[in-house]
Image (tube, rainbow, N blue to C red):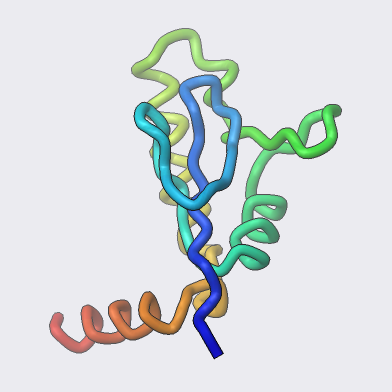
Length: 104
């Protein structure tokens, strides 16, 4: 059985989160893995809006300048990445993660 596609989650300078098969120029990476699990992770860790399907990185839209927006993005990544479960990773990603653990 072929391995599932990898889905990339990323955000724009506005804080809006999107997903796709690659990360567009100018967007900041959030995480990647199996599509269903990445979407579930985004729904669990992002800020929801009144518009269905619109998710935001907390603190980025409210930031008064780019420096503060970057700090909000970095804080979100530090908090949210550990919540991306191992089962969201493809086999190849899990294998690479295990190898890096053993190499340390």
